[in-house]
Image 1 (cartoon, rainbow, N blue to C red):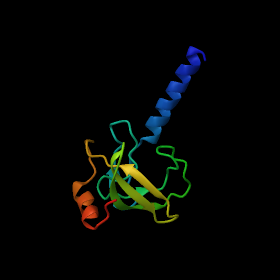
Image 2: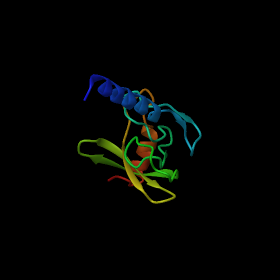
Image 3: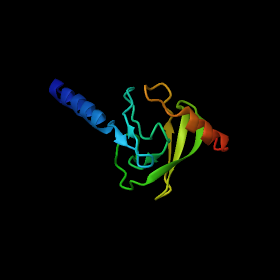
Image 4: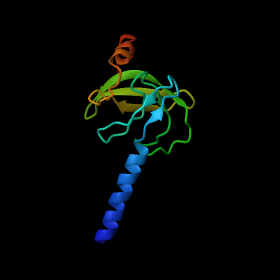
Length: 122
């Protein structure tokens, strides 16, 4: 592989990641949601914890469903840490997502606590 081909692939991945890791307005509470600063993908609202079904694989934005995803449980997964599990209200798809606690706009500890108090712990 030539150096220019490698550089083009690196630029393509960088542009793609920055495009995919964009802020959005929450479908449930309407608040503006900033992208994560860690370079990972934020896919749920840090305020109400709801999400939107946009990914088949994390960050790919390939799902056509677009349904609202309700946070259903908080779980601890080996290698991922604390995760929030969402269920799509339109198609039923389940999606585990890392909880963002170390971001400048962290996931709401109050909402996480409320979800855990409801018995939604995996």
